[in-house]
Amino acid sequence: MRIALSQLTTGPDPERNLGLLREDARRAADGGARAVVFPEAAMACFGTPLAPLAEPLDGPWATSVRQIAKETGLVVVAGMFTPAPDGKVANTLLATGPGVEASYDKIHLYDAFGYAESDSVAPGGEIVTIDVDGVRIGLATCYDVRFPELFRAHADAGAVVSLVLASWGAGPGKVEQWELLTRARALDATSWLVAVGQADPVASEAAARPPGNAPTGIGHSAVIGPDGTVRQRLDAEPGLLLADLDIDEVAAVRRSVPVLANRRLPLS
Image (cartoon, rainbow, N blue to C red; front, side, top):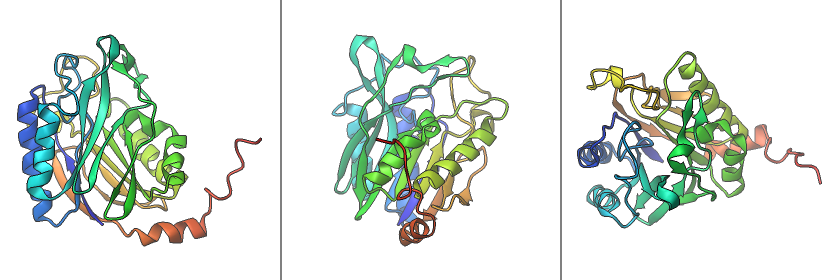
């Protein structure tokens, strides 16, 4: 399976961000990809008031993403914000394209490093997988990567690939943590791990990181094999990465290192 990772920097304008998505989706299709993955907050960057921008899954922004998928023939996965009760939003991944229509609401909210995502975002509660060309893929968002049980749940549901869409917070040691966590989650589930983050605004056309401590991205998107090795990666600046995933490799690694079959916890 050929998959495209679009590492970009989104701003506060959802319509402008759609233009970025459309451009990279076309490039991905030209490169022979079957799916293109955009970061968390592809609709609008963090640091933006989210409630006024949130739209339902049948609203104009999601409808435009579906049109991009239709124009390119790709499955498109992108982060957006949908309305939730009490004036909050859900941090939602939309997956749409040929034979695919699903959404995932981020389960683990980023209440860490002095930021409180739960102030404005309501948590999801369902594990979601999609099937692309017969390949089952699990969906996860950013802070979810710190929770290995989610990725094992993807594997238990039949997934051989997990996608992590992120807008990773910057700071000392955060690049190293991102790299360590993504590799660890691939090993936990012995699955391919496709980690797609927002580019670092400082390294992109944005002149500087927006004020405050909103997580606006560090780049370093990567494709990690089921044995935990990094197969391809980007640096901090925007870029499009095309990767070919050997799905048969998952079965081979799981035979060699059967950590899923050997689990003993929880003990009954």
